[in-house]
Length: 245
Image (cartoon, rainbow, N blue to C red; front, side, top):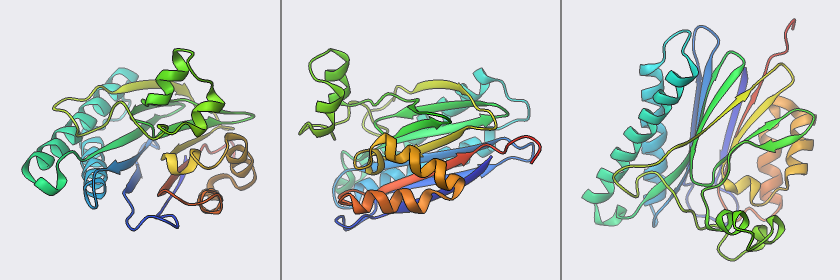
């Protein structure tokens, strides 16, 4: 896959509390991780940086050729829990960082299979002839939607739409959710923080991805900033290479 990533502070925030990383393996498999930190002036930035660093290290250290889906899930689960322990420990040791945490969405692409892990409200989308959110937000408004108390449209403008129900580094252990999707030559995977999907509608994301492909990161960030840019925004676009090209 071809991978492009971009993070931007936005036009309101004083610091960028998002972080991301991606990489390739010799056999053609690849990975990516996106985090959105929270917690005070510097806590979110520290939490997301630690999380990305620890997960990236664990993935690179633990990857093996011909990894099974179950092994990939175990690797991502171990990587995220290692990051959780590191963030939690540092938060306990520093008064200024107390309560910090971060969302995470991470993917291991094994041939034509994507193993996705997430905690919080950072998302993974799969885009082909439609756009579909693969992950379901761990958020207060998602719980309200799931229980029929509000609609999807009402969730977009709910005053508590930024309240998440699960995060890395807040507690001693973290519960990671997994999704498995097939990826073919016409598919694009998008990982993003809510600085994108909170300000840009899915149909607009779909149009930009289809027009610009793996070079769409700049346009997605630009669109989010033009919509107000009230949050940091991070996008990683993973475009499958069509067979025969």
